[in-house]
Length: 213
Image 1 (cartoon, one colour):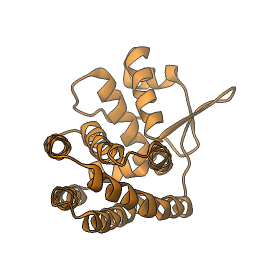
Image 2 (spheres, rainbow, N blue to C red; image 1 turned 135 degrees about the vertical axis):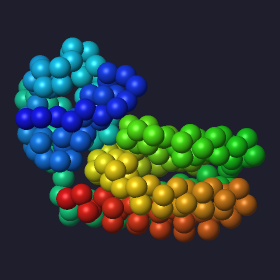
Image 3 (cartoon, rainbow, N blue to C red; image 1 turned 90 degrees about the vertical axis):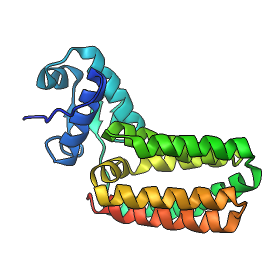
Image 4 (cartoon, rainbow, N blue to C red; image 1 turned 90 degrees about the horizontal axis):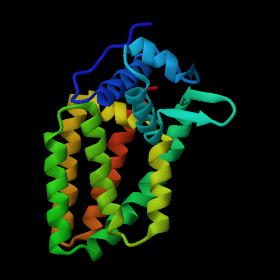
């Protein structure tokens, strides 16, 4: 099996991108067992950067570790994705509505900075990290830790969103415009508009993610 290496800054980022693409392209199949040693040999790397990459991939839901069984490529179905996104379209608009009511000028400024970083991201990992950081920063402003926890678990429920967002350039541009629209509504203190735009943003992301199956 040949794993395509990505052009990223560190060895762990190269490993992350290479494994991510192998999953997307079917070189690593859903449910397939993988080992640190095997991946290290395939990538021509030492164990440490590959181990770091696997931790990142597990955090993003692309890899799962089962005690006493090993590490596997995550298995997901179109039906499960639909259920996860159905919940996201309820919880995340609620979170942004609460966040809009709680946000101060300095909070909006920080969200602008995070969005600027996301727009400047030039690798798949940077896009994934930046997108998650921006969304989580909004949800943290909701002031509801339980809601944040539920949303975080849902994000891990459909890992292919990380693939669809970073590889679909049209979707990247659309997503950026949607992010700016959400932030504009928040800055204007329009909680209802922010919630509506977040709901549409998630629906658009759902279509892109489901297309990966």
